[in-house]
Length: 268
Ligand code: HPA
Image (cartoon, rainbow, N blue to C red; front, side, top):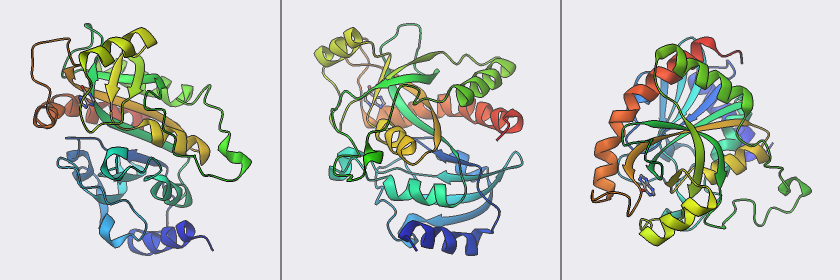
């Protein structure tokens, strides 16, 4: 038995046998969504092979239970590449998600906006991404499964349901391209100008490796950014992690409404 199947079995023994429908990865400042779930919370530290996610503003628990009548697994924290230099840090956790029965994943993050029409406090649905870091979580994978097609990586069906949920609620959910910057330093204004020329609409330090891994594992995936700041050089505000954490709750309230409406209406 593989390690992920074994751990999924142990998780089921604690949280119940019903298959999980959806995984949800929470970004900086979005942790309160985990508290909305009626279910069982397990610290990552008790889940052998789970990441050592230790960024302030993240809550390293796996919460399994029902949200709007759908069985979900909420990852209260992710390990970012910049923490330990490991782009595949989330691989095992996503394998466990799949082994719990999930076919779908929604990743969330905090990001800086490159578009004047998408402001701090707004949300952006990822239509696609640019791997600006050049890193890849599948480097070293030996099987041919490593050649993952990424043409339709951000799932059209999940995105349509998320857009419909947002529209129903009257919440703006523009789509755009997210560029992955390794971090942990923020970008320079010249890097932001370069990303703009390349076609990026938002920039952040996460999510892209998880999208690649999710596709590798056969999970459908969509991702939403909460915009916490204008990207470097685009406004006079000081960019900092403190600011990210302070601003994320602005978008988080809207994000929670959209996720709830999505769960009520999406056919899994
Ligand atoms: N750049 C990178 N990551 C971020 C930003 C940013 O401007 N804001 C929040 N996360």
